[in-house]
Length: 315
Image (tube, rainbow, N blue to C red; front, side, top):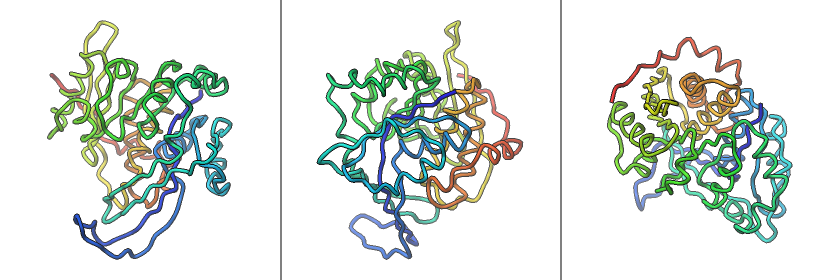
């Protein structure tokens, strides 16, 4: 069962501080590190760590450091569709972390240097991978035309709508599921939810507009999901998260999406996949970094008994 991730690659420059700076303020870091990131590579690693067979489709700058790819290769991720763009640079993310929270600024670089609309469908290698995969995953750190192209060739398409923005209805109707956090849900639906019930109602409203399914992550509170049944009814549930001590939340949403994609590719139903993804996210926040914090399938499975049972929500 194959997961294809179409998305971004960044060099992450991470600084550790006691507290996040206010606007216009300078704070001193206690340390910094550089590692491979971007929501695309993060979700590819998370899916592989969760047990998936993963192909990665991405664009990087010319002359990128080969050492950056070592971790991806070690996780068994196929990189045949990762291509260099002449005259461009690999994307860079500047991340500040304090007390488990973070601030991120991204310079997209080659992530926005993809082929033109007319050239995308001529990419036979990439198109073949998309059409053969059980699940295709994309995010919004690459051009929207690339996301549309990926969705049009996918059997099942997962869109992590991050960074949050308004999206065309035609794209939303291809998302199964659309995955958003609270602020991204507000960008898509118009209102940020205050409670799981409100998040479910907004997810349900999106389903009634034609989105096949929606997953809304709520940080430490867990997540909600909604989907449209074959009979046209919308069902869903609230999935609480286990209570853990958060060390670093950077990339935890990507751990969730990657594990979700692997579970769906294996044939799990949406509720089961959300439960497994919740365990993956809870484990990821307990360690620093992104790729290094993503749990193996063995660790995810071991935590599942501690994940609270989902609760059915009514409209």
